[in-house]
Amino acid sequence: MGRRPARCYRYCKNKAYPKSRFCRGVPDPKIRIYDLGRKKANVDDFPACVHLVSDEFEQLSSEALEAARICCNKYMVKSTGKDQFHIRIRVHPFHVLRINKMLSCAGADRLQTGMRGAFGKPYGTVARVNIGQPLISIRTRENNEAKAIEALRRAKFKFPGRQKIYVSQKWGFTKWDKEDYIRMKQEGLLISDGVGCQYMKPHGPLSAWMARQK
Image (tube, rainbow, N blue to C red; front, side):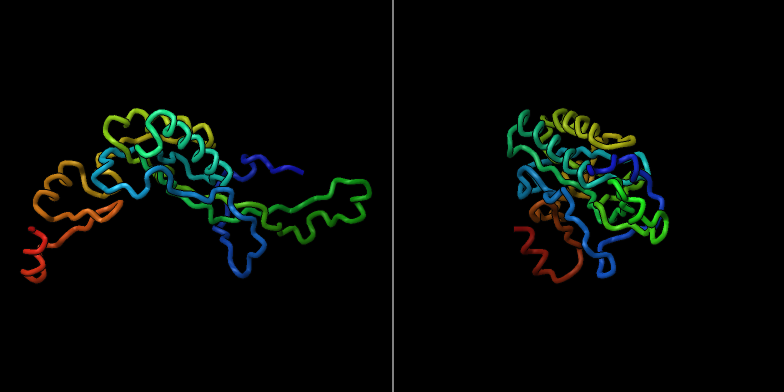
């Protein structure tokens, strides 16, 4: 028997049911990689950022997340080059789905119990997403912003429900607006730290402040 269609598990009905010592034998999620492209690129390399944001309270299967990841990555590699972007999948499939297996072979009516003991066995994993929650984020150069929007538009077809694409006002994956980031960088309040940056408070020893000015 094949997989059930995703419409069977689309809505967030019950409580979250994560993998635990009580919930064992959970199959591995299909999605294994959550960061693609030049993921170690410095924060200054990719100022533009585009988000794919959920517009529904629903569940997204790990298979759908993997399909969207592959689709998004393939388009960005083809249109910009493999080291001109950084894609990050922002949701993780922690919720375990259950299935109450029914036998459909000959003589099954003697073995089946119907609704007796109907609590199902683990069957797959999904991510529970809220309205306004980012699903995929891409940071890239300013001239590749339109390519990132198109990549996310194609990835939308892999998900049920409705999603929106937002062009972020922030600098890359940081929490500061682009104008503020440039100004704070010049004032020495921000220091590059890999993918993100550190905010240096104007408190503390004078020697530490002087070392930052060099």
